[in-house]
Length: 214
Image (cartoon, one colour):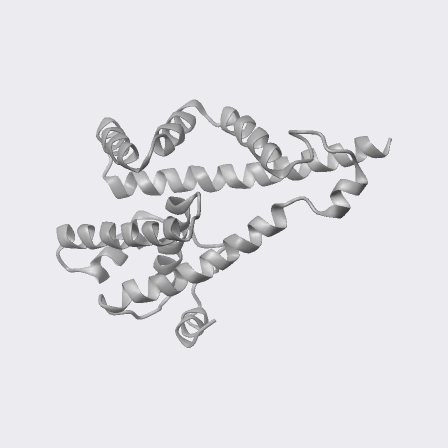
């Protein structure tokens, strides 16, 4: 943690677990980007696009999700007291992106089945192979979402980059939401979904392990 992050934490701000992105925090962040709200929105989109391209260049499949996580961390740190000028924000965000990328690589490495896993029980697609298991749990958890949330998250993440932009604009107009408000709503649903997926994966893995011992 660098000196600026330490200063932010010492200011008594909320931890990553306690803090959630909300319209007020996003509004304050946009104001820091530029006093003109229209120009601030443009700078926000340019920053996010730059981060998406950065993660794509590093061959990350979920580049948009990692870019959103990076921006959210910067917003949280600034909301907790971190002082950055408009000119410093993009450079600082790139530094945060580096940390997010390293964490992502560690998570991917942890998710890969180990030799010990293969020795404990025979390979069963969809049960012991991590990618299949995650996909299985994802499909199940999506189906368990409330219908409105399920439709929103499916439409929000469907299609390639250009199609997503078009779909999200249409979705925001249908729901009568500003694009950033829609993004916050989708982020909250995705956060709940990720927690449900991790819990389901752990439960299924334990169940598969117990079954192999019987």
